[in-house]
Image (cartoon, rainbow, N blue to C red; front, side, top):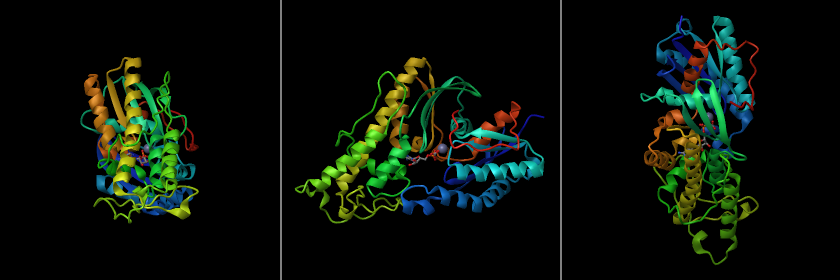
Length: 372
Ligand code: KG4
Ligand code: ZN
């Protein structure tokens, strides 16, 4: 019998997620328990706290996903779990849980690579790509370009040599004292700023489809240090600025936390903060768009998908669409909630594995490093 309904589980990072998906394409339920409140006071994810929270949340989240979908274990064709890459302690929770369920319920287990999941998030929308296509996955842990010929046929064209794009957002946000996760906060601030105000570097790495974002992060750090040092600068001498946007729950303080000069926490003028955010984002987006354009030319391919948490970025979505239109390339960008981590994408990829008979053993072990 062809598999129909798959339960997906993702605990690769700081979201506990379970989802019920029909035929790899129709989301019946997609539950995500977010840990932002736990980690934001540390300015980043604390792995030990993440795995402990997954343990607390995995049953309630799976239970809610089944209830909302109106299905029981007996209705499922199998369980798909993300087994890497990710935080090992977090992955262990999802994998152990899925293995225990498959053992007790006598159900097939399917192992899905998290990056493959991000690729398959594009298949959960009404408009689905056909093969082959180019896939740019930009998240907190990864920035990679793939050529996808078909299911299970992924060729890596490039990847980051250091920080992932989302990691750069999170680190710059921390430097600015803006809270975690940095992506959505900087995205919001950038809308008010001038993207040409500060000429931050763009690491194009000619001759390669690899990426590099750590130099950009360092450039922002140096820029902030130079502001602090310039005594005559009145740009940092303004009174504290209030929280910015209505929806901004990122713990905004308006104060820089530049390493080594923490004792001199300074207030940034709002205008300057917006400009820093916009100029930093311009650098990230310019590189991502330009390199994707190179890949399109090099691979002579006319279809593109964009996914991963950073694909939620408003400027990146718009600029990538404009580039695709100019080059007459078909583009698929999932809705924001499907770009960030979710288990529906794991269930979608899992459905194809199940159909192909790629069943995992109960000795499945998660892997922090797991190339696609
Ligand atoms: O895919 P994801 O949810 O988790 C990983 O697999 O890493 O991506 C999370 C990353 C974080 O670094 C977060 O700051 C970034 O995605 N992000 C954004 C936006 N929303 C989330 N980056 C830029 N703009 C956004 N709107
Ligand atoms: Zn992810």
